[in-house]
Length: 279
Image 1: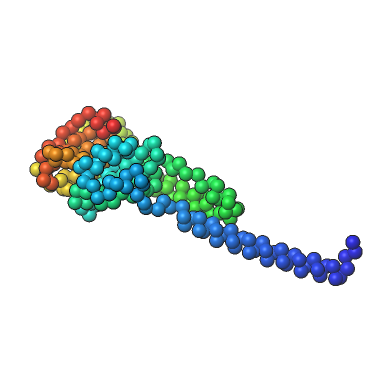
Image 2: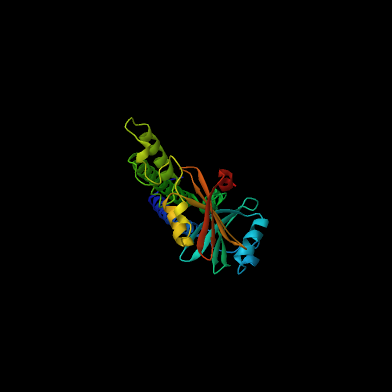
């Protein structure tokens, strides 16, 4: 084939058309990736297995949700509402149960990471369908998230280590395990120092159990707040006929507590076996 001036002009025109097509394709891929990324977070909804429990009394509802295969992972109280996270290992469902005025005001399915579980979803297929542009975007987000998480973990560990080594009180207000590990290491190294005296430890230290006798008679909200300030984490929260029972765990002193309250007032606090907090 002879490459005349006319043929060369024709090929140049076709090359421009191809470049325009590639540009339109790349734009489409990025738009699809953006829509997919927006769709990745788990939307709040109520699973059918527990939908009938919305509005039920919390006292009986907690027993029912356990009978359906869910296990209480953690709980918290915010603005007068109790929020518990339940995990079903059979269906791989994590649900957030909000209790208000003694009833299940809402039950929402949430991410498995909220129940301290690794995500079982694989977004690879979505990324492949979206093309190379989506893969690059997801990889960049994952790398940034991982970097931020590692940075946060390192900062919490260092803060805990400094507090433990300097004999500061246990200040894990973020309830972060990395802070706890750092505090434990710092306190242990402080204990190995020749001039260290066990009588200098402050409340919240790792060696020896924390005194909890002063909590009896306090309001339930004030008592639980003080327990959190002393390094305890709530493991269970149940309403029964004779009051409310809450279980608290403190990794530093391997201390497990059962707190009983009636009419919003703490009537007893008992040290119990570690197995109570591990079940």
